[in-house]
Each structure stands twice: as structure tokens, then as C-alpha cells.
Image 1 (cartoon, rainbow, N blue to C red):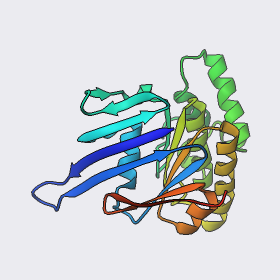
Image 2: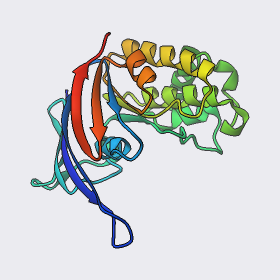
Image 3: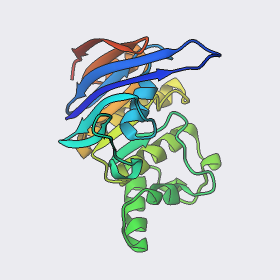
Image 4: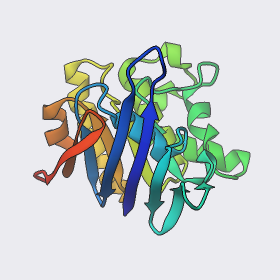
Length: 223
């Protein structure tokens, strides 16, 4: 289980301050962080991943403290065992699909990394992209490669920041099913950010609704 209690004040003299103050827990399956753009969803996701530091609070996953402001604990990104799928996928432009997937793997030999990368490419049906650079791949192929990379790192939890915002509706339908299948196969929690209600209800087991930096509602969705 993931427990998040964080506060962060953002802004300066040139813009109005934004105050993030959220508290929630995440269990099994796919949990949705839902709300309008600017409500604090992505900032929260980045704090969990460790690429953003809150002013106060505590983040604990499975008994391991990732962040504790009072105790001055802030575990580095690479030690949090978090898989992150960014909105723009963030694939390395100079690496092939195979190399992107292999990049985040823990200490393994070159042969083992290659075999694991090929296995993940096959799992998501994109073996044909193994030698392609991101610029040579479609949006759907890039999304699959990003998800494969996140799972290949053997994470304890996967964070997805609006991963389908850049694909068309038909591709979105297929990828939603693939993400659902990936979560069930991996049997680890997925935390999925979106402001698309239909998408949230299609993929989520539970929804946490954000508004202006606060959690305003939490409820179960149909499995």
C-alpha cells in the first residue's frame, strides 16, 4: 500500500501561489488521480517518484519510507523502485526501442538485458520497432515502448501521467486494454493520472478526485 501525505507551496512574486495539500492511500489495481489541469495531479505523481520534493509530509510504500520531512528522509529516485510513464513518454531520442527498454534495468549482464528487452517488446506487440528510434515510431508504439521500459525496471509501483493524451481515439481504446492487461499481469499497483472521465471509469478500480490542490472525493469504481 502507498500512503501519501504531502504539502507544497508553489509560486513566486510574479504569479499567484498554488498550495498543494493532499492525503490519500493507494492499494491494489489501478487507482486514478482525476481532475482538471492544474489541480495538482502531476505534481503529486512527481513527488511520489522522487523528482519533486514536498515542503512537508510523508510518503510510504509497503513499509518503506520514501520521504519524511520531519525525519529528513528523501530516498533518491533510482532507489524508489518506481516505474514512470511520462505524458510525452520521455524516450531517449538517440536510443532504439530495444535500448530504451534495456536502459532502466537493474544490474544485469548485456545478454540478459537484451533478452529481457526483446521479451518486453514481444509482450506489447512491438518487436518490429526494436531497431527504430522514437522519431521512427508512431505515438502508439512510443507509448507501448514507454510502458515496457517502466515495467522492465522491475518496479514496485507504476505511475502514469496522462499517457494517452497524444494518441487518437482508436489507438487509445487499444492501449487502455493493454494497460489494464499489463497491470493484471504484473500484479503491482498502477497510479494513473487523467482528466478524461470515460478513460478513468474504463481503466480504474478506484478514483481520487483533485481540485485546486486538494483531494475532494475518493470512491470505488466498477472493476
